[in-house]
Image 1 (cartoon, rainbow over the protein chains, first blue to last red):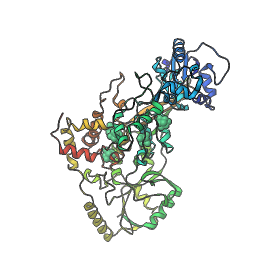
Image 2 (tube, rainbow over the protein chains, first blue to last red):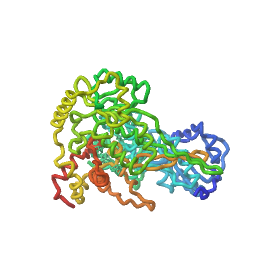
Image 3 (spheres, chains in turn purple, cyan):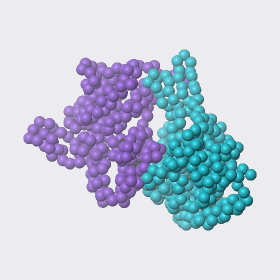
Image 4 (cartoon, rainbow over the protein chains, first blue to last red):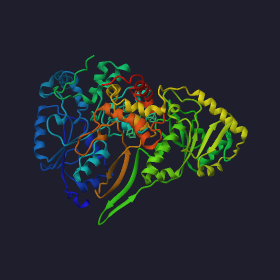
Length: 261
Length: 346
Ligand code: SF4
Ligand code: SF4
Ligand code: SF4
Ligand code: SF4
Ligand code: SF4
């Protein structure tokens, strides 16, 4: 079976940035111990945070950041046209992350808050994740991305396997680590509906899950929401909790409504 | 003939000595709950513990366990990984001892699983009897697992000023030499032990409305119960219950490929029937997709299938799953409700 491994090509990789903090690109550069090996496997064609020479010739596109301007959509369509494989890196690109907070209120009001009298010069639209505009082949999740997960994704792509992504929730990893559950400390947590893969990073360090990796494959949101209400959370608080990282829902033009009741 | 009695301070000293020479793992308290962890001496351990977050079986089948390392250049190289380091597992409760017996049956006798066998060989297990129920979630008494029959090398029973020590295996006999200050038990000690056991049996109130031996039949009769729908709606599929369960043994096998794309590690990690992907087949269908079916499967696997297959309790009544479930799915409630409303069918 080993003979059947696909011939290893050296893909040309382009890293693009939409609305984001650039922290996920930085995580790639933070792979200090592995970067030399990584550069044996791939070649960067475009990576503005790391190098000045650029090329329009690439096979694999990695997109960081959320769609916040109409021009972003045009850019994404061009990328999808050129790249054989398109993946996202980080929470802003998927599920929508911190930029999605803009969807909690009025877009014009948000523009004015940031740009004041010059708001008209910076046309803004409700925030969307990348896969609301183009087909995406894989997501590397997290705020910021996990280095190991990025490497696993890369090696999987190079041997022609589906990049690994846990379908289950953060709780699974959290319990395996024997963490004290946030609910047992009198707090609340979104881990039960959030996709695992971070090793339950935040609960492990005494915090709680904020949902940065987006929904698990099979979240039981109604049951968690009933539990949150039982623990004293108001519907507004619950909606705000989701909105921190998950402020986009399909078919809502980027606006997530507060749940009823 | 081998039974011993050891004073409490002598046991403390013995443990301190053992911890100097061996890896000793014992329950330690962590605020409101307990965990099995390595200790440096007797002062670290908390004997009054209720079942720990994860069961002590995590030392026999760790959440992540390397199975082989592999590499290929001109030829393929595969090296199995076995961890056979000696350690002492101190303070294991009777419920968990029963769980270890079941795991032995599955991984050692039935499956001949070398990775489990290596860890098991390295382990010396010192059990501690329970004399009163740990909290409202446990129901070992009903499952017949309060009495520790095997699974230990040594078994301690608190006899007030000291411990009564029973020997379960040859390894346990050898361990006796490590218990400095212990004396041979005499008739009077054994009589006292009988009284302690009689008092213990009184202290455990029945918590199940059904006899433990009747649970397989109860579950077989409850296949169409509406209760499964109710539980399926509540269950978060968080896997807390199966992670915490001392008799759960399901795993997934995955590869960690190195950046040379030519070498790596194959490992296994705990899996759970409560997760959607568990029963998914290569073509993408899952034959147990609805959440209520998954919950029903777990209770049937614990309460019925394992009993039918191995003749041992599959659930040892430790109460961990009920203790950890955020939405209150507790086997005591489930069995009692099934018993109370067998007519409610879908
Ligand atoms: S702390 Fe959060 S992620 Fe961890 S078990 Fe509790 S609910 Fe799940
Ligand atoms: S615990 Fe939650 S918020 Fe923290 S990194 Fe993981 S998914 Fe993100
Ligand atoms: S612990 Fe409770 S909510 Fe979580 S999977 Fe088990 S039964 Fe479901
Ligand atoms: S099913 Fe629950 S009570 Fe039974 S052995 Fe497992 S964790 Fe303990
Ligand atoms: S099938 Fe489920 S309940 Fe049974 S051992 Fe596996 S994970 Fe545990």
